[in-house]
Length: 190
Image (cartoon, rainbow, N blue to C red; front, side):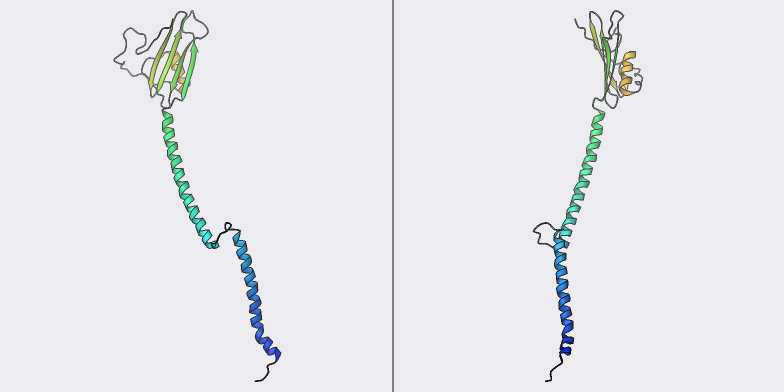
């Protein structure tokens, strides 16, 4: 067998050497890429970046479902709270005045206590030198059950920002005879 010139051997080995250098270069590049990808994975993770991304996506989808459920819960709670607030005592109006000529200092008063539906009562206290009387007049959706004094009407208006609806024509069956205002409850103090 004849000896081959060195240049032929070198020419034949050159593609292999180039492939080996290229392989080492690519291997170092892959090692750097893996090291860079480890920053995106939690410490000690044994999974690939693709598996980590899939797990992250599943977690985000689960979080989205939980957030949608929470938004529904908040909306339902808000609706229930708004409905409950309509029946809670929210509006009050106070009017002080002198009910009798011999009394000064505006010791008499009318206080409207109403909910969001204008249902509630007006409490009136009339003070004189020798006695005090307290009256309670109910409201149902802005309509008084008894005739109102001007001060009681003003207390209702202060509480709601509008005039009370007209009283129904029929007086209640248990109205006391001879009282100035039907169904008014009075209490005298000594």
